[in-house]
Length: 514
Image (cartoon, rainbow, N blue to C red; front, side, top):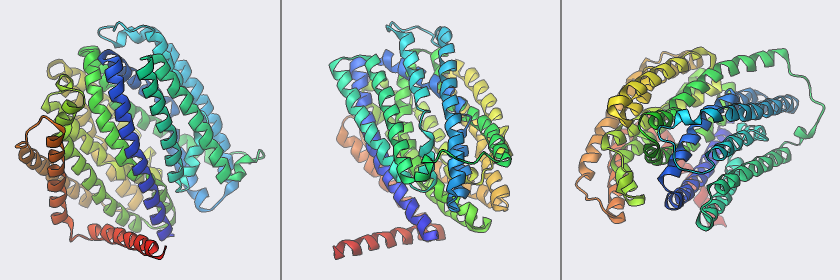
């Protein structure tokens, strides 16, 4: 069982990372063509409406997290009848959610003018917003079967499908931009592709799980409904916290600073979100294996795995956080020009927020696997209040830095300490003191290495792609070199080192026998 979990985790992570990296590269090409053909005002509208739609995603109530949790046990027991019953229930829920998103989204149309400081001279602005709403609503139809495939440790299947459709969409949108410069056609293409993608994933799920064809399913057990309802009510609050924390920044910037600044800020968010998408594949791909782990082993075993994964978590996010501080502005300058640069203080704050958010990845995976949603149901509400209050106050005299600072402070005072405490206390049955000591040491190490790397790389001039690549290589070598020297003799490092070495040698042996 343990070997099977490891193989599934590695396969899911590998496929997810490769496809996501390729998707990120393609998306950057699309964004570059977008900026060159449509300009900064359309970029600002795209960023603002994307954030409004992010707020509308509250309508899913956190069902997307509740589904995998409810499926881990029946999948481990291969209980097809119960799985089918759950799938039929979730199908109805997602259809309702799609309708709710459409209704709420369209009801906001009269208030668009209140969200934009200087209304841009863009034709069909209402139609553009309506297409954003339709795209968001359409993403909920047929999507529920995707969670079954991923919960069964087969996320590599959906990763491949999503990559193919994303590539088709990107090529289509580039052609539309270059030939027509028509933003409405650009948005329509996205709607068509997302619906087609979900239909195909649904078709593949039925192929993999033929019992989904059966119409005669058992009724939902009262206890299951109560359990789902309880988790969803807690997850809704979590969902509100995440959406408001991540989704209000562009709205605050648009209201207090301006739409063009939203466009500039969105370029930085694109890079951060792209990095998060890639790194999240590592932890999303192993979430189903963690779910299987927690329902089949002891808290002690789960805690040991958590510690090992936490080192990987720190290594990845500290490396990327440091590289963001050093390379963010040089990359933007080469990519789209100096006029799209933000101050270095904003870069540092964005990078630090990226790090502290990413350091919750393993904790979130275990919290979801244990179903510990109810234990901190009010934490997201506190985070919302802190974030909005600080952002609105600080934006008045700190600009964009104040908005980012609001997000950072809200995270540090809530999720950074409470979620790990809940996982340790209720999941592992252990005292989290050791975790917090290690977290503080990791934080100090990250800040020290980031400062040192930025100081050293600062001697390398800016200006062209070759100098940028040299900065990237030096940053990569410094961070990984220091981490290797510090962690090479630890049990957690040796565990992953041996796993990777065994996998590589087994692959080489297979290659030799071909």
